[in-house]
Amino acid sequence: MPWSALEEIAPLAAQALSLVLSGNPAERVLERTLRAHRHLSREQRQALAEAVFNVGLWRRRLGFLLDNPDAPAPALLYAFLHRLADMPAGAAVRLSGVGEPPPLVSGEPPSLALRYSLPDWLADHFARELGPAAEDFCASLNVPGPITLRVNRLRTIREALAQRLRSEGVETRPGVLSPLALHVVGPRPNLYGLDSLREGLFEVQDEGSQLLGLLVEARPGETVLDLCAGAGGKTLLLGAAMENRGRLLAYDPDAKRLDRLLQRCSRAGVSNVQVLRAPPEGVLADRVLVDAPCSELGSLRRGPDSRFRVDPVSLTGLPRVQRDILARARRLVRPGGRLVYATCTVNRAENEEVVLGFLRQAPEFRLVPPGVGWLAPSCVREGFLFCAPHLHGTDGFFAAVLERTGG
Image (cartoon, rainbow, N blue to C red; front, top):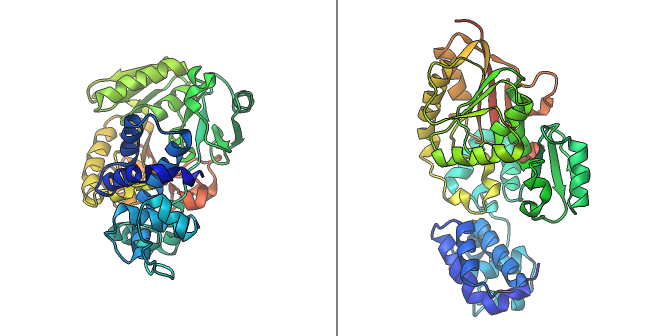
């Protein structure tokens, strides 16, 4: 890391960090800062990005080291460079612009929240949810997730895609949970500059997210409904599984996301998608996927400062929304059909409790084991899919597979 490039831009780094510490998303602050200072060298841009992301992420541990939870940006940057990046104190002073080196506390932070730089309420939540595993889970949130690709089986197969990517300078290794997954090995590449992406040979998709779509087990000729389609990552997976045969219905309340989905379908060669601009009624689908809006605690490692912008109220407010969506989905599954409920969070109130409440209200559905015959047993917990970064290297995901048994 070219940390020495910070020396001439220490005031700019402090300004950007102050914006992040006041609640502005780090990625947006960095994007705007780089756009406004196009003269920066490649090394300066790289060092600035790492400073913004690392201080944004580690702010609570750095505040502990400084014995000041409200320490200003230059002091936090100094503490990061000196203690976490192992830089000599003199160099850290010069590159952070702090003036005089502030004293740092020795010893290990006494709480889960301070050790892994989390809000107190969030660390307490993970401790309740995960028990002794909370330590490993929280540690994994501070390590960037892998770049994972999903092969588009309408265009190619995994082995051929790996060879094609190698010819484009990108090394990969197969995923171990999803038969469609490839993990990028080595430096982060510019995937969006690759011809293979423009040709629709793959999509960027976490391996755990791929599992959610695979649990639907969509088949050619069926009617399949993606009730919370978003921009369509799982919709595209379903379309490939259906081999473009049958009806694939996609609904989302965000019209712009649906427009983006249509563009992605064109690139991927998925031709059986019918976008719904209004909530579906009167449909009886063979399979329904509800990838529900949630608190997204399972994907916190994807944003260096997103943990500080999570609203704790959402953990208790979202289950009502999720129950309403499931109640709508209940009417749309044919007898003998399948309903998959999924989230990307670690919160039993949004996961197990929502599903168990639904089963009490909908006796025609039963919970069935997920991914029989293909899903790794390590991904099954109490009859549900559960995968997490400290266990599987994926983001955190939950899913329940429900089948309608009668009228």
